[in-house]
Image 1 (cartoon, rainbow, N blue to C red):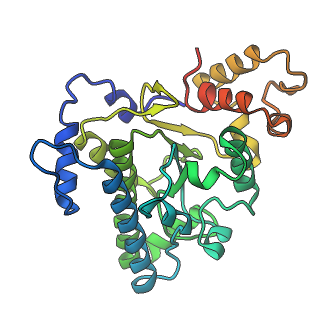
Image 2 (spheres, rainbow, N blue to C red):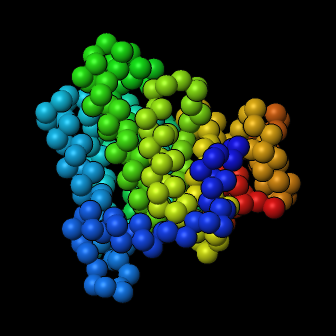
Length: 296
């Protein structure tokens, strides 16, 4: 989608304090490396994920049971656990996420499509070990609009929700700094104030780290952050009001014009065919060209 101020900052030649910020973060987390040694970024990442889980658990137990822990994150905090290749960011947990304590769970339509897409690229059953799913807010509402209502009706809860968003944003920015992974935000915000705290904190933390870049499958990205349509209703495979997105989608379709039925009558990508073919290279090209915006 359109390049954000965060993305633009990633190319700033004055960004030279990344190493210093990693060392500062290691001091905050109590894992100070020897003088002259580089911080252990993997250990720092695992510590940050573990702290995230403890923090949300505390919110659930002391503020509201509607704060939802993502059980899938436990594996990333384990000493011998996987490391994510990519981070997906949603808005806030819905009904299924609340019931199962798992974000973007496979039982939902959007979750099933996301699992199918990334499993097709990384291998069957690999979604949870390759894609770390986080939310802007850990607070459950049946629909995202309910978050605004909850914040309006209860000032104390509103403050807890805002601080939760700030901490979620810091974890995401820290993960980019530590691991160099790209972050894909799914769903197009309406421009309201529900996630204002998240956005401001993400920008501030990212800049504090010296605007680190992200690398995906050997390619250095123009910027680590991308905002794309949601998997729900196959929106992520459709044209929309963004010319840059549409141009990338068209490049992908033109490159694979020989795949019969891939282009729908209205010029979108057939999600049924794309996912049904099980062609890992084709799926990977869609991720690279359209979702991550690397196509050329």
